[in-house]
Image (tube, rainbow, N blue to C red; front, top):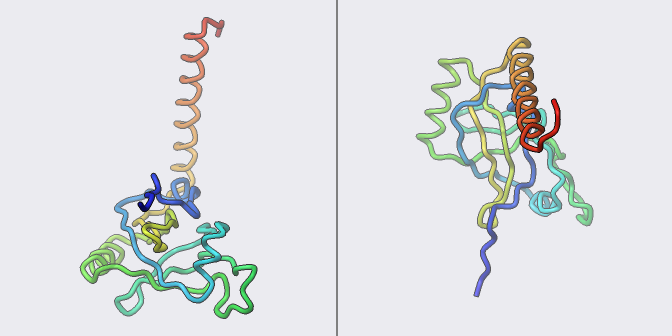
Length: 160
């Protein structure tokens, strides 16, 4: 009997995206890979930092995502940061294109993972944060952490 994994193995996360952007609606897209890129992904050293997606000729292309070369491959053409096509339904692509054109949003990859043996990327519509937004988010996060620490100390019976 075939064993099902509990969770999809995540290859890479773009944790910086939540700090740099206000994230909106998300989609799961397939990704077109060449040659030994799948084995390179299974090695788990991919990076989404600096990656973005763009709509060209009614197709979505992923730019700037680093997928390393498989170390035991004889040769590999295309480079580790080449643009790769994303697979979505036509209606989804049209909806994303409308929102990008109307609102000035950008498309950012959030996670890269395998699902049922196929490489998938989660993309989101995002709006860039201003510097003061980033500072405000950091201050709120720090205040929340400090209150949790104080509550924890109080429950343990330690003095403030």
